[in-house]
Length: 89
Image (cartoon, rainbow, N blue to C red):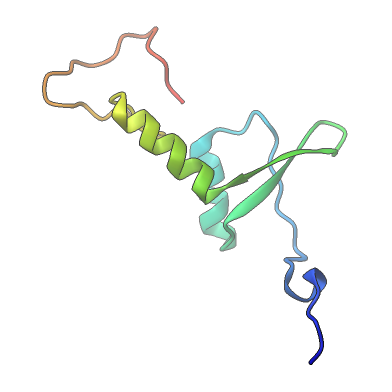
């Protein structure tokens, strides 16, 4: 039995993101390209991290607990709309 390598299963059409890209756009990249993670590169094209669907789901879950969503504010039963100074991601 031959051992598989990463090369045998890796994606070769690489989709990347910059650190300043917003969450909603990353989610769109995942959908459009049928991928679940993207490397994040700096202005010199050096890798600085990776963002995955799981990362976005964890962030969404923590924001929902605070009454927010990655894409919009989600009011809870006694909440009012956030002020302009409220955090948005």
